[in-house]
Length: 420
Image 1 (tube, rainbow, N blue to C red):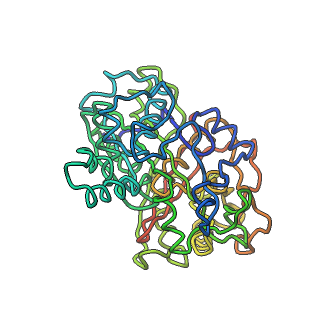
Image 2: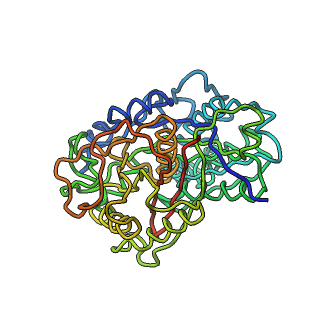
Image 3: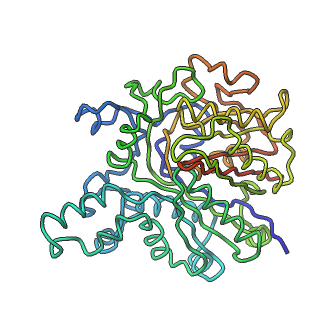
């Protein structure tokens, strides 16, 4: 018997806030988390800005030098196996579990699992390999590999939270945490798990973000208020960010039995591949459109009933254009959802992006507002016929969608419903 999936907890460590209230305030008021980033500026890099994380200083490659909120204190032994985004994730998951009202017995059992998504820690990998080559194996942190490779997030969180159910890590570039959320839905919907913790995360530091400058994918605009501007005709690339976002997914009857607050319904999801290029999206947006169609069919929601779409739209010339074409092909003119890209405020979180933006979408459904798309000065004419939200609105809707696309043409679309 197929189950209904609901969202009962959210946790954030993001450039626009590290709590639900702070994130909501930033989205409503369009307060940006992007600022001039000293490691770029001081080294005269061609890019200058980043969506920065506040309240944490994890810039040292030596974990014992990290500073972070005292309530998340960890032993030196545990820290030595962590990447920066692993620590961000522990913070986000802890807050999501508190928000959901879950205790250890409810999360450490065979019916509760955890899916994570990140690209691994480039900075920790670089540091540990450099020490290995210069100083030899006897001078390397024995947990160096655990803190570095793509599985570091899942290794650390499954151990820390004593997870006994399903666990896995997802690596599909900027669609990674979208896949994690979707497959978590599958696990609950098909009755395999009662509850899934899902987290997307990235370090968001120099080694994580600067390589994209080599691809000419990052904005070179030094103004934090203009660098990330999805749907603006003068956009010139994305702005990077890091952090973590966690969502708690549960089977409805189990959530209701314990009196949990329900943020919204997770109705279905879809995925597709462009089959086109390892980096660039399919120009006509048909790959992403297939994932949107699949998600709507699975959710049993008509396109005309979708009131809001949180677009992937990273502020790149090709990416935004392809997505708009996909939206136009799925939604009829005059019945299209209001569209925005919250990356204008946060920056692009890579593997984190899907989870962060899905959580924003669910929060907006619950609180009765629609986040605007900031920083637009000259709206690109290619958006004609699509209602781009340039300011946040105090408007509620019944159904919303969040989309993500990654390298290799990986596309994920998620459909959420407002809780009655």
